[in-house]
Length: 253
Image (cartoon, rainbow, N blue to C red):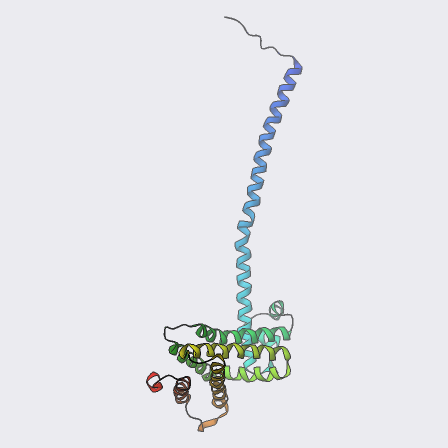
């Protein structure tokens, strides 16, 4: 059997050892780099839900403040303050200040929030919610009368109208809301009676809206001699259907 000579000089040993060490180090470095990349990938995935939860909580807190602010405003603008809104929302004053920098910004946001909340349902009906457009019209009128029945809603509108006379920004907001409100009703009237022109539907919508606004004032200030709101509601439905040209409106009440 032939003997192999495995002898190598010191220089070769050093070169071999260096290569093995470099190779092993490279693998470890590669593993660490991969681990680092995995960590960087995972970190946002674990942080996103936390940030999302915080944002959701902040938005809920803001909505709670605006709801409380709407109630305070309905009690009268003279008593409207950041401190009173904070107490109504059961939060600290600095929490309200965190979301709204001053009284004007809170007031504007409150009017936008409450007004949009009331308007949303009317806009939906204007786009069509029922197979029969007459049902959209009747529901539209019912929604208006539900609002009229609530004293807190009536007082809110009185305060809104008063502020709109003195604050241009609020005046613009009120005009925009009434424009959307009437446009939604006009769209329903056009579907109920396709023979109506846009101008005719707009005039009828304004007339019917004037009835509901007048009823809001009379319900609050009319005293004992005002007919019941239920009776007024029934009569206004009949008049609205007859006005738009629906045959036998009494049968649709």
